[in-house]
Length: 377
Ligand code: AMP
Ligand code: MG
Image (tube, rainbow, N blue to C red; front, top):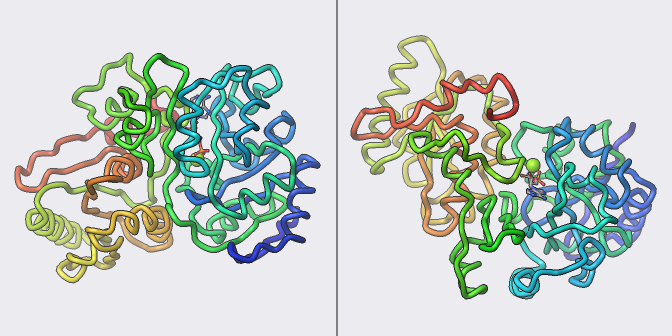
């Protein structure tokens, strides 16, 4: 199949292109489009065959449900019999925006879209191209990230082309996205609202709007802190159980005070060089100049966490094109989005984290698990 890529300006939407894309969605085809978080791969959410095409194009496991995207609050009533009061409050506060809610589904939503579950994930994106496409199609659009399963989510149309050219009908290209990491997912089907995936909208933001407690799925921290891993604790969102991305080169994160981190990374790089290996470093603007590796890239200023989130996936993709054997990265535990950023980076590193200063390896989880399977057992 020929994949048409149509470039457009978010501020001056090309209505003809949107109409063509909407026609494709209505006829059950796949269209990739920008959202404010990452690019999505869209299909008619209520058409099981169309949803099925998403899984095929991405190589996505069939039990990993899709997020349904809507353009009007009242469209919630097309997917559920009862909108939870908390959903109304959160929608008023954060939609359109990077918040996905899990609610009980009605009989109209095909199980192909929800990976066999009785619940459905729903979000109203903020990107004008996404909203125009959903509204023009008249459909609810199921859209996971528009990457091949296991690769970093696409933050530019070029990333979508690299993964999906020839497999989908159209790509709407509105340049790089604004946020760069996937939406926060909050589950509203339990007594206490529970964050299943951290993102731009934080626990504090949700709590202040709901005026009550919000939990974080214990399965997320169980994965991140192997020392507390309890066999029975698994992330509730099926997608959080899969390995997301590992660059071809072995990625290790080094945490600690900045001076110690720089010293430790330079020591590790020298060690690898003496073994004849090539090393890359993910640094910040503040530290870029002090590393002595074959390739050093800055993710942005340490104080600019939005830039760090926006650049993360682009940098991971870039490293795959470079001929390095190992990559060392600083950690970015920034005040607001640090949890969301480190959640993605730790996954990419297979949870290989060194603590600079104590010399002890805090976790070697990734190596032990080795991820032969896509799925974390
Ligand atoms: P993506 O759209 O690729 O960012 O992935 C969507 C994420 O939402 C995955 O982690 C899914 O497992 C999760 N998800 C979607 N629907 C549900 C649901 N009904 N219950 C729990 N997690 C869900
Ligand atoms: Mg994804």
